[in-house]
Length: 396
Image 1 (tube, rainbow, N blue to C red):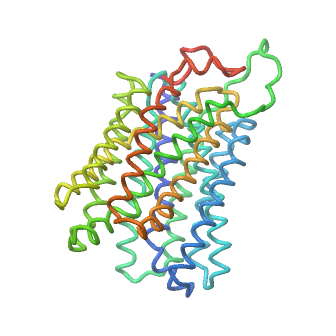
Image 2: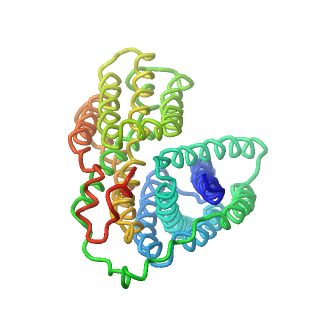
């Protein structure tokens, strides 16, 4: 394998990890920032919508820019903006200041999210075999490292602004080290003519976006409701209830690091179809069991099933039409991210009508929809795109 590609792969791993680290740093410090800004939980909930809305906008802006100028250009700029924007929430002393900070952080994070995924598609295409899921696994590892670092600095009594400043310095160094190894855009052959203009987003891309929405919605439910499920429905102690999310997150990380080999052998369609089915089975058991250990096992199986699904959707969208890879990834990632935000918000009102564990049955249904729709990832779909590569260069 070309050393250039190996360096590009390591650089992409680095960018994913630093993005996960930035997001993890924010999450760990939410309670401290909420207290510093002097806002209520309800106000914080509304401000988090700005974070999500900013991310969605950043994705839609960065995707077309990556197509026009190349991910090698957009990734470093987005990384610079994202790591620097992390400082802003730590400086906020009011609700209005925090609102502006979260809107900025969300926009920059969304831009980095899409541009680094667009670059990951380029690296995967050059490798000629599946490597997308491992990049997302590195994102999870970055978040885990942020949790460890944040817990330590909080125990030392550091203010969020101080921790964020140090985190920004570290991530800027990592981004600078990774930038030279990012892949340059391949020049268009002279026979290809001018670069085609971006037309309407193909229907298959929107279909992938809807599936991403459903699966990321499911992931969001696990992030925000797994611990509460064990504590409020099964009366588990807080220390035990925390294991539900811990095992889910660990299963997601390990699954993503191992999924590429499964994709290479069985294909993207099988990973999404059977992964979604495994997730549905795990959550169904979790919803109906009165046993705490079985519920924790169910959340773990849920994480294993979900772990490799969304990266396949991002990869398939990027390979569908490589001339408009960034824009297509931005559609799938943006709509999917809305699902991540909508899941927790949707479950809350439903608990007024039924027990929390029964609301999860709706998520089981969403996973089954993904099972039925998995065929949209077949590489032959690239033939529908007017400027698509030949089938062998589509999603491996």
